[in-house]
Structures are given as structure tokens and as C-alpha cells.
Length: 82
Length: 82
Length: 148
Length: 148
Image (cartoon, rainbow over the protein chains, first blue to last red):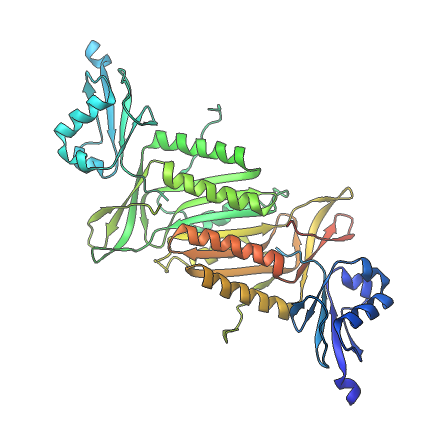
């Protein structure tokens, strides 16, 4: 039960899904976005060379941000709509 | 014959036709645009209070311009296309 | 002046939405186009002396207008890398709510299409000898003055 | 954030010229409108590594895109005195030559409609989470990068 609560949801889009191999998944025991980024780069080294922004609960963040259980963190490659 | 050759053609457009009462006519023995304007205002005093530009052979002119037989002089009120 | 023949700009009566659609559709074969910018002028039912405008009757000095449209077209192609450029203007009666001006620019990238369209609309409003007589609901007329 | 429900922006597949025509026609009853400005994004058949783009497949982060479109709409109405504003964007496959973005602003005077349309297009390109994968003629894919 506590485990479910401690999870954050990850979303990847566009070219980043080629690197992450999945577009949505969950992770446990992540305290902030710096820690998250390090773990992601360890798992997917190609992310280090990728340009992307993080959105926490649909808001783009800069710098390090504390994460809470239930947060949705999205990895957004450069937009190319229109 | 010479009389025909010495004529210039006048064109009036838009609200100016309400003043001139005609949209195209000819005039004789006009040497320049200053003289033309004076004659027109004499005939149609309301022109003195009208905003308009003169085009000689489809080119808008400023200041006084010499007129030659066969020239087409147009009285252009402010444009309101679109 | 070039020797190119001026393109037909004037249309009798209003410009229909279907005409705009056909113009757009005809560009689907030009696959280097990335952006279209369109301006449409629509006749407003402004109130004048307590009476609303029912229609505008457009007249022109056709030879000079053709020359001006041609100059504006050439200048736009000179100033912006456009793929396509079309200008249509109504003559005669256009009812309130109907369209009387249609400017359509196409380019590889958006900035050029957008800037060129705006440039052309401004030049048309200031330089092309067209006059609109506003026909009021009671049938009387009032000469239109453009917003600068 | 207001309580207004975000308007539907996304369309499956290309935006047809007829859809644009219907949007234009629906404004003929709004007789205080004097000017419409329309931007259309069209898919280009760019050459990538010697192969031409046959189509773009658009995907999005729907919840965030809806939020962004809503923010952009509110900001545009705040910044410009608009009568109407419509935004449509394609999802899924749009072939080269077809239209994937349709921004439509209407105002009493031309300056507001034109400026607002440009403002909205720029914000969409920079802020809305949509991604285009260019599908090349041999079926391979290449992720699109927007012109800044």
C-alpha cells in the first residue's frame, strides 16, 4: 500500500521514447528531479546527449524540484507542432 | 483637329462625383495642375473643402505639374478599399 | 515595370468561403510550402447616424488599380521569399458579414508568409484606388473612410 | 485558470480546406467583424538524407497541450480585442501538402486580428507539447525540429 503511494509516474514523448523504450512507467523513492535525472541517465545513457525539458504535473520546471508521491513527471523533447 | 489634340481627360471617383456631377469629361487649354485646380474650384466650390489627390496618367503627383494634350488627370478621394 | 500581365484581382460581388477553400486546396500540390497566411476583410454593420450599414458598394479606377496591385505584388516578391501570392478584391455590392478582400501568401517558413501578408494588406489599404460607399439600412449612402 | 472548459483543438488527420471554409462562413453572422487573419501550417516534402518527407505523424501530451492551448487563448483575448479565436491542430498522419495547423482570429479592425494571429502561432510553436515525426518516402522516420 505504502509502495503504491510513494510512486511517481513518468511519461516520455517523441524521440525520447526511442531511448526509454516506454512512454509511461512508474518509479519509487524519488525525492527530487536531480536524483531522477541521474537515475534515468544511468539506465539510459543516451539521455545525456538528448535535449529535453521536465514537466512536473504539466508545468515545465527549471533547476531542481522536490517530488511528491503521485507526481507526474514528463520528459519533453523539443516541440515540433504546427 | 487641333482642339481635340489640346484636350486633357478628367476622371472623378467616389464622393467627388457627387461634387463634379460627372465621372469623366474633357477640358481644353490647361497648361498645368495648379491652373486646373483653380478652374475646378471655380466651377465646383465644394472641391475646396474636399480631400483628394491628383493622378496624372495614373501616377499620383504632388506640387504643380505641367500638363500635355492627351494627359489623363484623375481626382482621387481618400481610398477606402478592403 | 515588367512585361508580366497583371493578374485578375477584382471579383464581382462578395468573395465566398468556398472560393477561399478552393484557393487553399490548389496549393496542396506545392509541397515546398510550409505556411500560408490569409487576410480576409469583412463588411461590418457599423452604425452611422443611428443607421446600420447594410452593404458596401465598391468602385475603382480600374487601370490604376491594376497597376498598383501589380506594383505591390512585385514589391512583395522582391521583399519576401514567397512561393505564392494571390490578391482578390470585390467590386459592386458586398453585404455586411460578407468578404470583400482576400490576400493569400505562401512561403516555406511562417515568418515570411505572415510578414508579406501584412505588408500587402497595408499597401492595398493605402495605395489602391478603391472606394467603398456604405449603404445604410434606409437605402441612403455614406462614403467609407479607412482606419489608418 | 478560469473554469471555462478548454475548447477542442485536436483533429484526427489533416485539416481540410472545406473545414476552413465552413469556419469562415460561420462568421458571416457576426457583423461587427471587419477582419479575419488565418494561419495555416502545411506539411512540406523536405529532403532528409536524400529522401523526401511523405508525411508527418503528430503526437501530443494531451492534458498538457489542452492546458497550454487554453492559456494561449486566454492570453490572446487579454492582449488583443478579438471577437473570435479558433485553433485547430492535427494529430496522427498528415501527408505532405496537407494542412496540420489552423489559427483563425477575427476582430473589428485588421491590426488586432493580424497581430493576435501571429502571437498565437508563435506561442503554439514554442509552448505546446506536440511532436512531429517525419515519415520518409522509404518508410523510415525522422523527428522534426521546428524553425525558431
